[in-house]
Image (cartoon, rainbow, N blue to C red; front, side):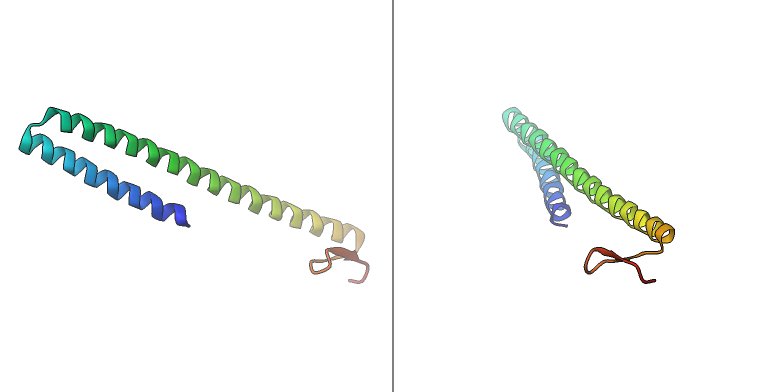
Length: 98
């Protein structure tokens, strides 16, 4: 999935931002650059959280579709056993021969 790749990119960006903020803080002792770095890190963390939320909703939607398909297949199996019918997946119709 594309989302996993983007999450990895944002995590790499977050690491670089944290490293740059630490270097600027230690080397230059610049208070304003430290504040700007912290703000950038906070924004990146919020973006990362949003991407994880999107990824989680994609996984939940996929699981819902998979469970629904399995439920429909189980219903067709029960109906075919009870009525001595078979379900043709190509025509999406019931037939009487078994």
